[in-house]
Length: 420
Image (cartoon, rainbow, N blue to C red; front, side, top):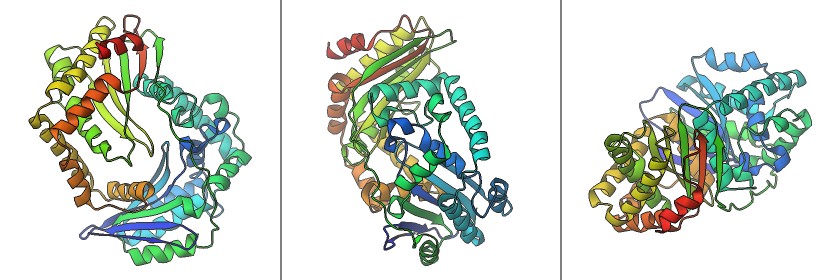
């Protein structure tokens, strides 16, 4: 399998990987504009725009967009994150050109029909309402807000209902004009694809576009803070975030191995101590996520009202213990989990296309899998212990609590326990 990468004169980037033996392909456009690129009055518009892409173009109605892909047995979808918006499809190899045509059409030629805007506004408002009814969704929005207070990176991707209710056709068109230039787009494909054909299609479809000077996202600052809301629920939801490296920092590999060993699987410390030994919860996990210039290691658990205090303090104690006695065996197991998860995932052309786009967005190139595996293997037990001490004692923290949480410790109390 060979990765190939090119760029049109206007800055539009193309990256692909042919996967021999496959009968299908994944193809999509990744736009380097997401939630953190919105001004405060635009909060939620990147996600709204993603929805509207499927509501009709100059050439196709909303139904025709869906039928074009589903008539050949494929599927089409999109998502908005804090740093990108993606439009992608999975089709059989003979239908790659069709998928490219449909995706290019929805990205370049949305009509923003006022009637469809109102229909989709209602859909998004229902989505926002559903999120607020899902405690283990809303708590992560609150945690993000406390981690990056008063910053675009801390705002919800869906946006507040009052802003979504007010977005106009001109608002949508304005965001496209600001952020959907050719130099802000990446065409990524994997599977039964051929790079030269993709290049030709990209030139025909996107080569005429003029570059735009896209707005650069403000640097992130991990602020920390606490959000707590008492509500009559079956469970008390606990989420703790700690500042971690961004994805351009090689320390990200240490952070990911640490969070895997701490709470990434059934053999992890938190799972074994909090769930298996003490029976305090059903779900507990730790994970590390990253952005261009910052990242967070997050611990989440749901438990009963009378056990949330014990769960919170044990979590801090386990973090401190990891800094003292994290074993070589635990680090080796976490490394193996990390490598296996990455390599197994890349057997899917959809995952591979997404990885290619993400790496081009981050680095401007695609580092080899061998390089990535080498960086994972280079993380030592001592590296993980040093990082664990930083997480346990010094890293800025944010806390979110939701449900019957009156007995839960405050962030200040947890900070005292960290420092003890």
